[in-house]
Amino acid sequence: MNMKKMKVPNVPGGGAASALMKLGVIGGIGLYVAGNSLYNVEGGHRAIVFNRLVGVKDKVYPEGTHFVIPWFERSVIYDVRLHPHLVVISRWFNGIPEVNQSSIIARLLLVSLVSQFVG
Image 1 (tube, rainbow, N blue to C red):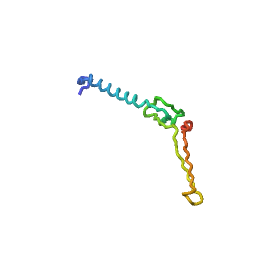
Image 2 (cartoon, one colour):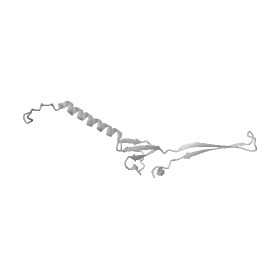
Image 3 (spheres, helix red, strand yellow):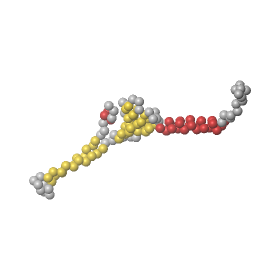
Image 4 (tube, one colour):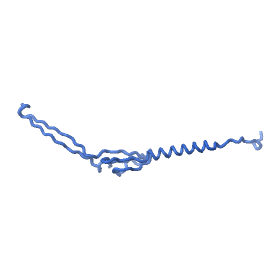
């Protein structure tokens, strides 16, 4: 069989359907990256970013909208508002609880130290 005289059939390139499919795939990847690259830190919260290559970044991100690289970076958001806790201490004296009972109620406000989030 002589390969030089063989004719290759004409195959259409796909035209508009192929171009539309390429555009759809590229557009879908673009929407995924755009949707997952922005995150919002609400008021009273702080965020740190974990990077898959270098670990936890040293910066603590304040409130606002920030940018991460999808899949490589992930944000972790912490609540840093004041949290009230009630501590009740009851003491009975002389073994008679009805007569000599005293109690102290303390309301403690605990705050998260932002400087301790990253090492």
